[in-house]
Image (cartoon, rainbow, N blue to C red; front, side, top):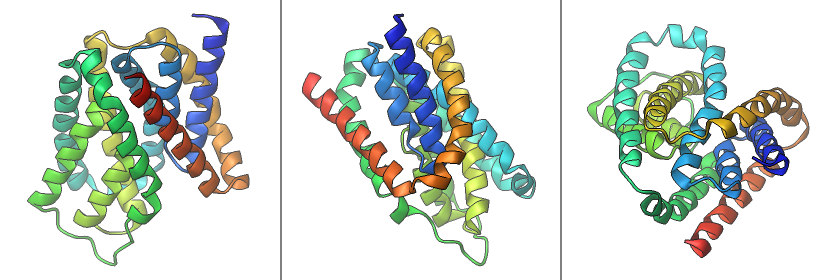
Length: 248
């Protein structure tokens, strides 16, 4: 790995955590940087899951008080997410890099549109919690499959599903979402590691950058409007999709 590549990856890790703290969408930056570094798309996708994982864990820990009151729902949805994430990750491993590469521009385009529409999809707080239905569990299972397979935009999808199924206050839904993201990412990382599709050297460079970026994101959140950060992430997503359409 050249020094230039290492610097690019470190900066991408830093920026991904920083923008996650403000508006989300850090996956676009990590996946894009590893693409520019020459990693095959499946390896870039798998390694991006590892880079994002520490942020998922710290976000879930920040909501540990809310989660303590949601043991039943969190356990049930967690088991569904574990199964869905496993299925999604195994599906990814079953593909060849050329096959996955052909899907990447469409996945990126769809995730970018979803991310851009995020403020419109943000669920409204409800006065009462709703009972968890079979339809809600099925929807979360589908989202978990997507999360294990690709992951970009997964958080927005889960919030939308939780808003329609379990309801309650926004922080209740966000707490459950963060926990489910940890579960999905954990099982996907385990599968990717056993499958030998992780770029560990690249991950080792990006994770320290992500740690610094997460801290700096608080400073950024207080000074830069989230709309500007969101526009930046959408631009990156569109450029990546265009790159894969042109080079694919």
